[in-house]
Image (tube, rainbow, N blue to C red; front, top):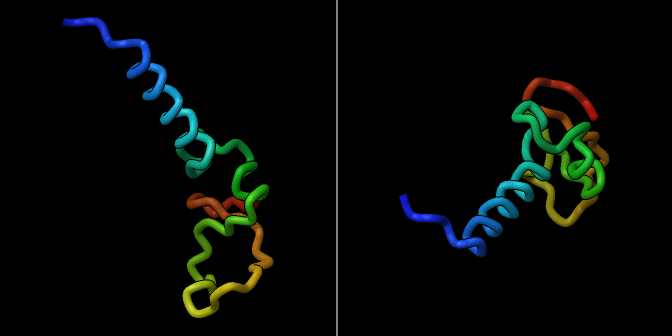
Length: 70
């Protein structure tokens, strides 16, 4: 097995860190939905009116797949 170049390894670790920061909390990332609250991302509201409304602010708290609110 050949060694992994440090640039490739660093890029991979950085990508995984960023993915974890924005991920679904049930996966172990985005603790307490911090990123979603900060950006105003509503996450998995199945009754979300965002499919029919554009360029409007949604006043919805983030909701995880597990049904937990932020």
